[in-house]
Image 1 (spheres, rainbow, N blue to C red):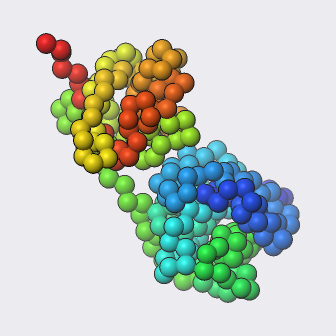
Image 2 (image 1 turned 180 degrees about the horizontal axis):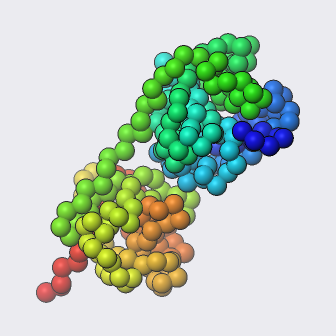
Length: 277
């Protein structure tokens, strides 16, 4: 890592106060570090949402040590790990798939090690705040020059368990990754997946969107493919490609999850629209 001040980022689902405690631990161990709180607003326990934030954001940050903490398994036998990437970054967090998409976006995984060396933890480790006691100290020590291999034994990180999109002739079934703070659904498919199912879609092309509401009730809506929210009227839905490359279902100045009744949907199927009789 280059530069006179090591760069450290942290993203959590903790909220401001607990995230600030983690940043304080980092500054205590590595007082010369430049510590950025990337986010403390990840939806609690939503590992996929956190993973997608890191995947989207970290390529735009300086090479450094990046700590991601969305850890519903804290205190269980799940491993804390550090992952070194091809770009030269080190990602620190729980071994629950959270770090893997970002590592792939940063040149791939070069090596990964469990955070087991007590020299790079706080003296007392709680069962419920590993962000303070394990992840933040490890990140700060790496920023201060400790080698990843010194943190503990080599491990193979667990992948993020995401179903792949399934494309057919005139049909695309995709997982819902998460709902963002605007109520838009971020879908686990990209433009190439859309093209595989439908060919080149012109803006304004209508698609039928089908999903199951909680309890299994089938639901459907007709939604145009557009490039921007302003291409539809206020309150109207659209399918678009978001800034990270994922497909999204949104409503112009509204919450798609509420307007379309998509809350709780796990997958959606897009189909070319059939003409009304």
